[in-house]
Image 1 (cartoon, helix red, strand yellow):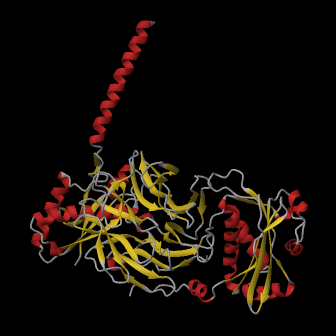
Image 2 (cartoon, chains in turn purple, orange; image 1 turned 60 degrees about the vertical axis):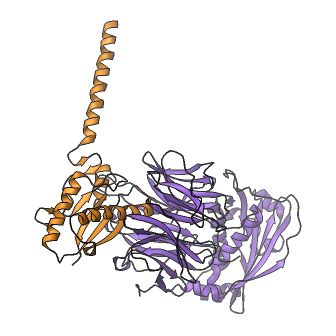
Image 3 (cartoon, chains in turn orange, brown; image 1 turned 180 degrees about the vertical axis):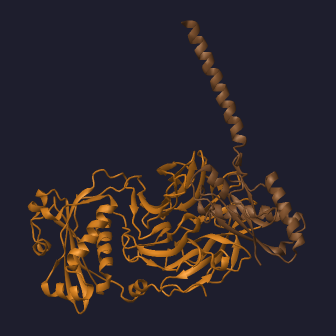
Length: 459
Length: 159
């Protein structure tokens, strides 16, 4: 057995106490209400007021005992506020300017007061302690139209309070943009420490906003490129356990892990198929890397490519019918697309420079990639036939984009250039909107690389 | 006046020509690099007296240079003399490439060394391959010389 994996309690709890979602009011049919366009770079984020969730004194005391938080209502609203701000689409207004008390606002907002501080949307809500559980209700209001847009309530275990904040954000985002959110999600990545020549790397997992960071391995061996199964809390990654680099499968609920397949050499660059039933990866032998799949149920291994060049970094299309990968069969690393049985191989990248790490968008229409041209690294997107190439960000070194589950944001990692003495190295996670706007560092307790975004935990 | 202008221009052209030719020659050899292949000895260790442990590669390449082949012939001779020794060939890449491609490239480089050793009579049973991609640079610098030291295949005694 490989080094003992730290059990991920959160994941366990998540399953045990599935959030109960109760629709208390079906949104009133409405016309001409506010909408946020997420297809353009948003230079005018929507002014939104997130009123602290109100809480009665008895509930407040109960949660203070359990969660060691003075006012859990304010804490949850802070999560919502932060999520909305980081999305770049919303401008949460300063609470000091709020005129109405949270409890009264939740019953019936005085729209003229909220209008006065230029809020276009308003979130109100209430937290209460019901039979040892956390009950949260919230409402989304259109300030200009003076109408309620949405009202929902959740009941869950108190420890899930952060997820409640993320779920509220997802609901608000979906109601205002018309697309699913990406806030109740997690990021798995490689946490890094130590000098560049002897980096210690551990698998780590955290909430999308950086909270609840946990290390999943101890750092005794090199680990690389973890990727989520899109349908479950499984992860595939590369481990150098016993100096044999192989693709592993890790169940983050139980901590159990196993080698994928029985290959007489290095396997690497793993990803799941969209249905989560197969792993696609590269196997290197005699100086030649080819792409293989392994069915996780019947363990059948199939060879997909057959070419004396390096074929690696495979990624399925969301319908599972195609695979994109990079190959140096033209002399340099370029992006190719083929049918999932390996037929019909077509090169799609023809711009200047070399192209790698193609990742198919969950929406199916775009492929994100890393490009190296004239000593600079770019994260970009192109359509699946290679047309419409758009570079989102340029830097000294950055690579490995991974899509948010709604296909609107990319997370990747960036390394700094060291000075003449080799000092000044760092690796950090960054995210950027598909529009090319809203580039920001994703904070991690240590350095980080190889991020992979999970699917939405709840739907 | 005009004459001085013409002379000045002519002089500039001559200087430009000199600069260009200087560039062309300096690209061939800078003492520690030939082309962009490392030729120095800073990082080299020895398996035995006169037997260097590593060979270096050009960017994106896995072709063995003349110097690399000479090093590997010395390694082969040493391995023939010490027939019980088994080795690991550790293939590496520089930091200027994507992680997964570099893992494959490291494997390809180590195999280039393995193939050459085999043509000098070393059995493949005695050789295993381990690619580190760009995970274990010897020089942590972000400059062409550091990168040239990191593009390497290192022969390590396994027993």
